[in-house]
Amino acid sequence: MELITLKSPREQEAMRRAGRITAQARALAGSMVRPGMSTKEIDDAVRRFIRGKGAEPSFLGYGGFPASTCISVNEVVIHGIPSRKTVLREGDIVSVDVGAFIDGFHGDCAATYPCGAISEEARRLIDVTRQSFWEGFQFAKAGQRVSDISHAVQQYVEKHGYSVVRDFVGHGVGAKMHEAPEVPNFGPAGHGARLQPGMAIAVEPMVCAGDWHVKVLRDGWTTVSEDGSLTAHYENTILITEDGPEITTVTEDGAYE
Ligand code: MG
Image (cartoon, rainbow, N blue to C red; front, side, top):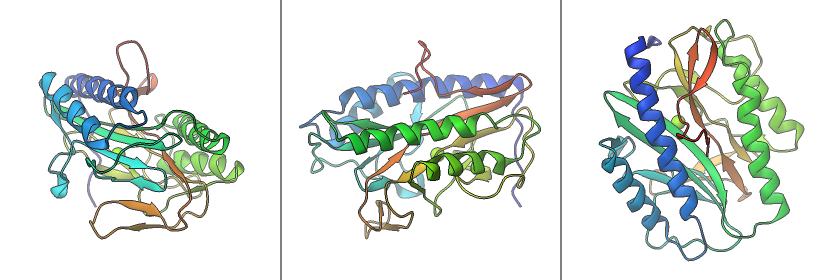
């Protein structure tokens, strides 16, 4: 089994630098979500932004992924490939996932943004998904078990009539974008690794308005809800410290999306 890495104080500083650039990139992408914008234009801007900060886009080339962001519209849950042909329309909900690598460490975060005016149901899905992250966040503390987070996310999402994706999960993050442990968004509390200061994890609820089953399209990446229902995603990178959980993917002015 892959060991969970503990980040030294110097490494934690590098994670904060990576996290800040990643959060700024997310905010930039979110600010570009509007009718008529193609997802490729957003991806181009994010890539230029990250490189302008002296960092590298974590996703570009990862497992062959062809872009710097994953932009996933409506029933696309995750891993949507930015394209000139994907032009945003009023009422869409647009999930942007982005990572940046600098000084040897990664940040990883995501959020779902409304494109113009959206339905009440779509707004509620975005809000429940975002809040489910914070429900899990409360358990991202030294001494808790990983699945305490998972359970809190699932309980909150299901209480609101939605479902959590099972096939993809959160993860440790550090010198590699995906490290141990896996951080599922479902399951009973009290299982998995015990959290310790120096660990860093990406908690990322992926929520479907309908059933939780998803499928990957023929491009090998684009992951959609099987029933075609709307989906949302929210993610931050969290450092476990002596003083509690600290989000690294936060902008200078304290914004988480
Ligand atoms: Mg992630």
